[in-house]
Image (cartoon, rainbow, N blue to C red; front, side, top):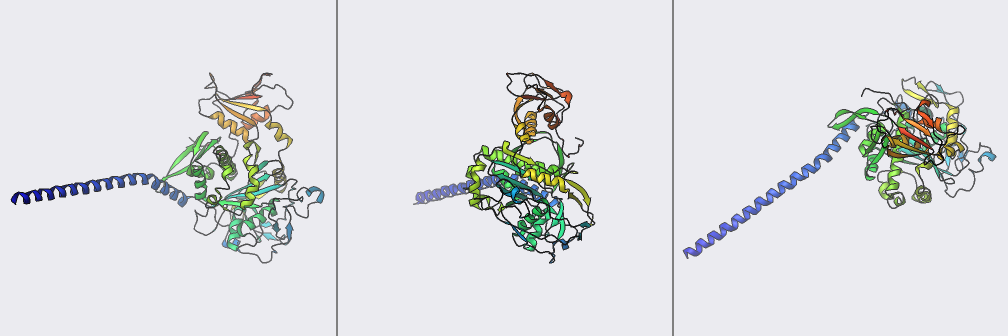
Amino acid sequence: MKATRLLGQLIRLLLFSLLLALLIALAWTALQIASVADDNAAPAGTTVARRAAYRATATAIHVDEDQASLEYDPGIVLMQEIVTSGTPASVPADESSAALAADDFQLPKLLIPRDPEEGKWMSGLEAPRRVTPAIRRHRLVNIMLLGSDEELTADNFIRTDTMIVVSLNVETGTVSMMSLPRDLYVYIPHGKMGRLNTAFGIGENLNWDPGRGFGLLRQSIFYNLGINVHYYARVNFSGFETIIDRLGGVDIAVDCAYRDLYPIWNGEYRWRTLPVGLHSFDGFDALWYARTRKYTDDFDRGRRQQLLLRAMWRKARAEGLVATIPRLWSEMTDVVDTDLPLDMLLRMLPHLVALDLADVENITFRKNYHTTEWITPGGAEVQLPNEEPIAALMQDFYTPPSPYQVSIAGPSIGVYNASDQDNWDIVAAERLRWDGYNAVALGKLEDGAGLASSLLTDHIGTEKGSLAPRILRALNMTEEQAEQDARADREYDYVVKIGQDYESCTYAVLPFDR
């Protein structure tokens, strides 16, 4: 009996020991899992914190002068004319017949506000008259791409600091892309002058009829620039980052060096220098690149935003995502606010699938030519539109590639990297392609690394019609950096060897101490 009791105690002790060991093992495992979870969460927490710091300290333009700019002037009659297919009745019939032809795209009609009272002064300026509309001889679908900053501010007002009009010519299969300066000071049809980037927010706050924010922006663009925008797509900063990240990032050939503050953690910043070269950006870095204005201006920023759109399109085509847009439509509209109907997208899809970047013309405003700097009575620095140069720019925007553009896209240009810097051949080739040239990057030049000065070789060898002067101008080179070597067996019509002195940044980007 005693032996049996002792055996029972030993068994209970053994079972208790096993249970205790099991509990210790479970507790240890739980601690390890928690530790791994904390390690995995740290990078995510860092990303969230630095993005929050970025947005908390980023600057944005406040509503012009005072909140009275949001008030509607009842003396303005909102809707006067209905424009069919984007062409006003005031355009002579013989000039607009193509625009008035049957259009199976069934684009939304534009309602135009009446001009303000003649001779009326607003904000120190006589109210401008409505400009003569650009003549549309082709079937175009114009979409306004907007980037807004409402995440940065707490004043319940939307500013569209990014405004890019993309025009698809469904007859020629080409696209024109134009950036509009956010500081363009124009007549807004709620009855006051203001920055163009405030028109959308004013329309939203006034519940503008028709079309709320985009309706007022659309009327403002037609009144001041003479072009009709049919649809819009708007993203905020988070949406922009999401799109870039879902693409797996983008590669950008940076042809101007930039320097600005870069958020790193909990409101802390460091100076970041982005050198000339090929860079891979995730959504956050792409946003930094698109928004930086230190040592530069809004006109160059518009150019960079178009470069980003080109990179996004290149990545989407390479990944075969363009044809899947309809299937991803519901997911896209979670991050993109748009009035583009799905059936319209389906009609456009065959043109988009076939679109190559060589078929895209990039158009930007030139400071002090298309615009004039001006300071409002309230002290705001703005840009006044210069009517004649802008009218020519808008007509170019509505016109498919000219014979000049076709002529420069024909001859081939091979670009070698003969410098000690990585990927400068890609940077130079992309700079030429931006201007419409048929350029291709060829990599490192064997036995040519460390070339002190860039060199252009013309293998066609004829003075008449030579592209050499234009290539030199695009790459910011001099005549002394060009030579002729006519060759019938040439592989490329022109060859550029990029040397150590390469510097094609001819935009409004100021030098800085590196």
